[in-house]
Structures are given as structure tokens and as C-alpha cells.
Amino acid sequence: MPLLLVACGGVDNEGGKDAEFKSISLCADSVAINEVLAPYSCKVVDGSVLLVSENTSKALFHYRLPDWTFLDTMFARGEGPEDVGFPIFMDTDEHSVWLTDIMRGNTSRLSIKEGRVNVDTVYSQNITGVRIMVDAAMMGDRYTLERRSSGGDWNNIDKIYPDYLYVTDVTDGSIKDSMTVYSYNEIESSTNENGQTSLLARIRNAPATAICGNKVLLYYPWMDFVQTFTVNDGHIEDYREIGQHRTFEEVLAMDWKEIYENRRKYCDIIACDDKYIYLRVSEYEIESSTNEEGEKTINEIPHRLYVDVCDWELKPIVRYDLDKVSARECVVDIYNNKIYAWNSDLDFENVYIYSYNLK
Image (cartoon, rainbow, N blue to C red):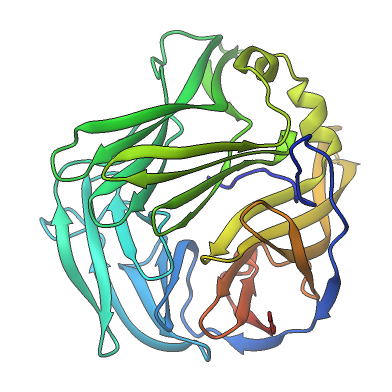
């Protein structure tokens, strides 16, 4: 699920904005992709990019960077014991690859050796689970960070369920530590003209996550608030807040409908190292139209795409404006100093490659 976020301009201890970013415009080289893919999850690691695609007989596609040379596929979709259902990459640092199958309950650690993807470790227990609104990340080779709802009972409609962050031991599923976060799930119901009831879960104030080693940053862009901490031997330590602190009750009272409508930006954290955090930001405008049946439709028209580079307190370093504003996906290859973008609506026909120089 994509995160609906806004770009940071740097937050200080009072939640105010720092100096503006220095902006650098980048123009892309384009690389054609011969495979017809619909990638929904990707991971850049050790000179390669791994993509997980829908509606293909093989789930995982492996390309060599920075030229996007196709190398291999693996993980067949099906019902067999070695097949996969719906695998996604978990948030990890730039040298680790963890793939979890939320339908089968298997989680695998992958590595790239001599140009091939290898399966090093498989845990059969379900890490992320099929829970309502789950984000999960790996911390090293043993612990996961899971942000999950305190509720999840679909029979209790019109309810608010706060989220919590858990540190879980992947080897046995035991919870080692936990903390509150400032996001929540709101379950709503509606009934159509045929009397059929449907349920919708809306997530509010979802944080973007950066992980490097044992260091974690949670960024809440809707209210310019940051939580940072470390995870040591399964325990949350060195907790710190940046920005204006709010209680959970104050977060619930915020006018989320107005916030989402007025802040016309999508943003997520797409990479980090021990110095920098990279945020992809897409700005858009609203265009409304009416079809022949008189139904009104709302379209989001992108007009700007950029990557913000910040330090670990989200102080601005540089902003890279990208010329392909319609690209909906964007990843950073820190090793090769490249930014890759593509438009997922075009069946992954092209990858746009940007070179940057961050000193």
C-alpha cells in the first residue's frame, strides 16, 4: 500500500521549517524493458535490482545495475510447496534482502552471489500475517519491526484502532518490545442500493520508515513529527522525538479530510544510509470532469517529481528535480549514485535513469 505523505523541509524541536532545499534539475536517460511486467515491490541491493511482478508465471525478476541488464527469474506462482502467492520485500538496510509471502506465511532471506539470487534462510512462520493494515521491516537477521493495529475485528464497524510498533523475534515469533505510534485505523461501513454492506479501513497519519543498521526513523509528514530510536538485542533504546509533540487524542481530533485534500503531495522514504535519507515526492493538481452519465470523476494530474535528500534529523541537504513527472515509482541506487523511475501505468515499458553527485 503506498504511503500518502508530504515532503519535509526539515523539522526542528518546535516543529518549524528550516531553510529551503537547494534544488538541482536532472534529466533522464531511458532504458527499454523487454519483459511485460507490473512490478509492485522492488529492492535495490549490491549492484542489482529485484522486482516482484503481478500476473506473471515467475514472481521475481533480477536485473544488473546501472544498465538494467535482465539476468534471471525465480519463484513460480502456483499451489506447489515451492511456489509463492503474494510476496513483497520487507523494509531493510541497503545490503539485506528479505521477502515475505503474506499469503503463504513464508519469509526468506535472499543474497546475490556471482550474479545469481540465492535463498539463504526460510522461516515458515508468518511474520507479517494477514492482518489489517500491516507494515513490517527487518532489523538484522533476527528481529522484525511490525506496525500493526490493536484491533482488526471487521465485525466492529465505525471503530478506531490505534497502531503499535512491535519488535518480534523471527525465530520463534515472540514479542521482545513495543511502543505506541501516532497512526490508527478507522473502519467504516456503507450499504448499497441492494442492501449489501461493505467495509473500508482507512489509515490515518501513517509514518514513513528509514532503517540503517540498528537505527530507525519514523516520519509523520502530516504533522511534521519524527520518532527516532535504536533496536539493540530486541529492545527499543535511545528514543527521541523531533517536532511538536501531540497526544494520541490530539491526533484523532485533527481534520484529516481537509489535510488530505489540501496537501496535494505523495511522499515516501525510498532509501537511506548512515548519513542521508532519501524521500520521493510527487506533487499533483486536481482535475474534475463529468462523463455522459453525469457522474463526476476526480483525476490527479502530476506536475512535479523530486527526490529530497535529508540528514537523520530531516534537515534539508539537496533536492533533485526529475523531468519525468508522470513516473509513479522511484528508487535510489546509492552504490552507483543513480535514481531510477518508471510509470507503473505503462506496463513498465521504460526505466528513467538519473545520475546525481552527492558530496
